[in-house]
Length: 263
Image (cartoon, rainbow, N blue to C red; front, side, top):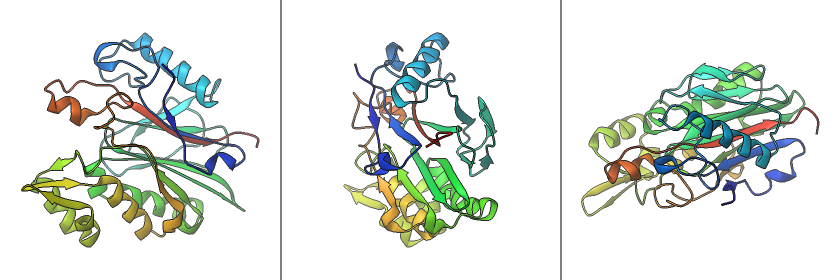
């Protein structure tokens, strides 16, 4: 099976930019992790995961380069990455202005966000991992503000894309999630919630897009690509889908962004 890769329309024309939202298609993992699982922390065969990384990097043009990942904690810590490394530490967002550094985020329902900018100051890339807890703490908004304060890049110069994630068709939540979101984000959160048959569903991508816009990123520069991960069982891993079925064991897919050392 070919690897599943979603890219943002129009971004391919940006010289030197490498980005993509990968799914589970292809790969060497078996069983609950079948396909392109790229997480070493979910119980999969480590050799299969290593082989998956090699397949992924060859497919997306990162052969010979390392994809920097972090220890995701469903929080709002933003990490600055100055050079290629295997593990950037604990956080849920990373930013780099170094060429040849590719940042990756691993998900199985949470929202992967990639951002880019090219200004007179140089080129910048960022990734964000936004589950409901990270969204509650405003990790996407804090990343935009960190980029402005640390790198001097205006939110108006950013382009951001939200990749495949669980959608409002499948993401049922209780009052323990809905109420804090509404208290914190008000109308933005309310607009991302819908009621059906006495149940509440959350559009996590819509809320994060609203928070990016509130942080100053122009709405016309905020894109969304890919389907609901819980619906697209053949294409994507989904923790919520597997938990609903009673297993709760699944792989993780990667989303990445970075600039080549030369255009």
